Length: 246
Image 1 (cartoon, rainbow, N blue to C red):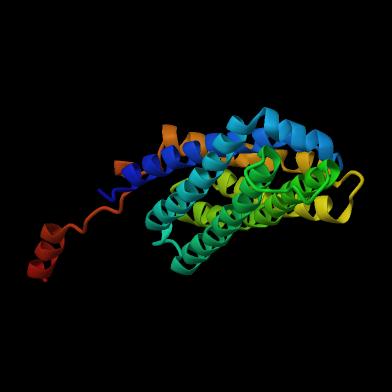
Image 2 (cartoon, rainbow, N blue to C red):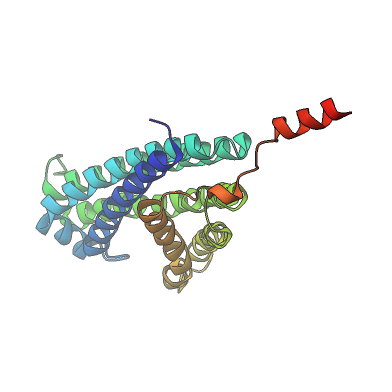
């Protein structure tokens, strides 16, 4: 059950599922969240409350799948460097924990916007501001989680590079993708005026690297040694004959 090919294909399926669910949750957030506009954000949440709920569930599910993906890749690559494989799983566990916490704020914002909690003591503008504050927290929490979206790719890329189970260029791409995630997060946090735009474009290589990894896992699985690449067994008969002749 733990053959490299099977583990690789399982990882590919989990990675693909993680990517689909993550993309759905991300674009639903973009659909309702309007930075700096409390009234528009509150209206969008109310108008698309069903999709917001679905996005919350998708984000929770993708974070869970991400953890299982890391565990599967650990089993596949721990023989290369157990410490690096363990660090990869730790980074994923921390990132998934941040995602889970983020969804508490998004769900609270949904409840505040739809009247599930009593905000009678607040004016309409005040309740809208509360919704925006909660979704702001979720939005910037996502940027914090993006640090670990990048960090886990570094040991994964290293393991892929050293293992000979994947093309070395794929390992390099993953490490570069991890660096791009980190730079994008710094830009979004340090440059309020244009940081989010920079983050969007600078993480494109990250997406390309991860897509390549998903495709390779699903289509190829892992590299296996060809018969002529294997070390030939010693010719005991021949060596035995020489010894006897002596």
